[in-house]
Length: 259
Image 1 (cartoon, rainbow, N blue to C red):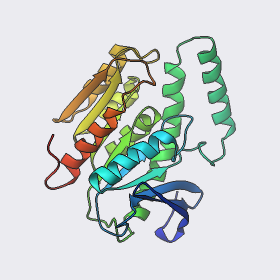
Image 2: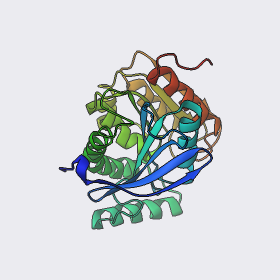
Image 3: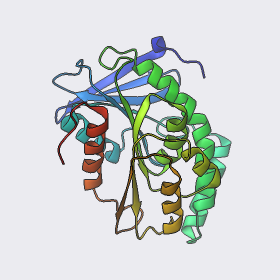
Image 4: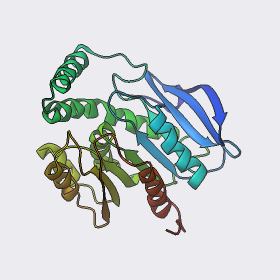
C-alpha cells in the first residue's frame, strides 16, 4: 500500500481530561492521534496502540490506556482501525471467519485455531498499514523521525504487533499478551529482541496456560517480563495499564520513572 504524509488528514478533534484526540484518515485508513491537550505540539515519544478483535481504535479500553500514556508520561499515542474494524468495511473472507468464530463460541467449542488463523490474515494486511501510518506520523513536527517508538497491543493487537515489531526497527519496546502460541507466530517472536512486557490471565477460558506461556518463551528479548493475573480472558486488571505506562517510561525516555 503506497500512502504518503500528504494524504494524512485530521478530520476532527475533541479534548477531555487533559487529552487532545484528533481523528485522522490516511487514504482508506482511519485512526486517532492522542496528545497532551495543553502542549499538543511538544515533541515526545510515540506509542502505537493496536486494539483487540471486534473493537476499534477509540474503544473505551484504548481511551483508558491512551489517557495513562498521555497524562502519566506526556507521550503521543496513535491508534489505527484494523482491517474490517471500526468504519472499515469487512470482506467476504472477514464475514466467513467471524461467523465461524461466533458459532464456535456460542457452542462452547475452542476458538484458538480459528482466531490464530484469522488474526494472521489480518496481520498480513495490517502490518503494511501500520508502517505507512508510522511514516506519516513521523512527518508531524511534534513526533519527528528521531524520537523513540513503542508498541502496545493485546489480543488481536498482539497478533498484529508481533510481526510489526519483528520488521520495524523503529519500535524499541513493546507490551503484548493475551494470545495463543502458534508455530508461525512463535517463529516471528524469535526475531524480536527489544524489551517486552507480556500479560496473561491464569484462568483464561480461551487460551490454555501452556499456550500463552510458550508464546512468551519464544521471544528472544534479553529483557522480558511476564505478568500473570488470576481471572478470565476479559478480566485483565486495570492496573496492568499503569504497569505498561511505567514500562514505556523506562524504555522510551532518558530518565524513566521510579517504581
